Length: 299
Image (cartoon, rainbow, N blue to C red; front, side, top):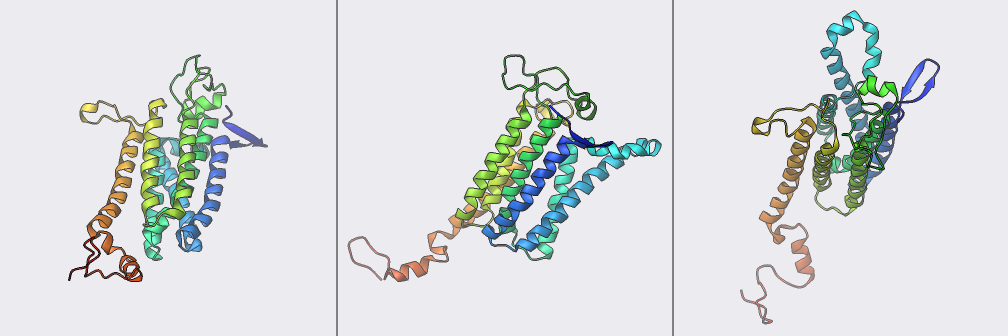
């Protein structure tokens, strides 16, 4: 593959950053449409996205500086190479910072949380799809060895893939980044189709969380664990790596969001629907005189 997209003189344009930036632009364009579909202020949602994006980037890079501070003090020029470093911990830090900033902005500007989250879900899935395509081009988050029998295996030969991401060279690997990109793109399309049809605010966001968690967990099965933040969890002895832990938490969070709405609808019953009484009145019935089924009604 091609870790470097092109050169501008001595300036290197990495494929990962360029493809991811394209995904961000497309996601920002899509969020203007989904915000209107969800019935929220497009200008405020746009500002929310921009602020959250900068918060995510700043938090991830600040973590790199803190972790590598002793080295950067001796070699300040290495600060320019930090943009080439990719790691699940950086992604998690950026995601938490971005989500925290988005929540603060939404509350501060009185944006409806459920509808705003619904508007953000499809663009986020689209952005993740392009991020994985950038990872495929650069060799970041590479897959396990595929052997010679897999016709769609990828083989990296550029030394920069090894230098920047530790990608093994000359070995056929599962294109797990493509698997993940396809999963996220499918999720984005599903959420985009579901958005105008949903009636309870927050349902699309809940489905998005569950879908993203499922996609991450399954694709991690073909992801090489080297550099993926493997952790020991009790008796599992490393059976789950860092991204899979995050995936499980995403699925649980999405299930809780959906469960809250299902429970609310169940507890209230059909009579609690805001349009139920009005519909009954239009049909000439009275809620206090239930029909017995034989054409008569009892007080």
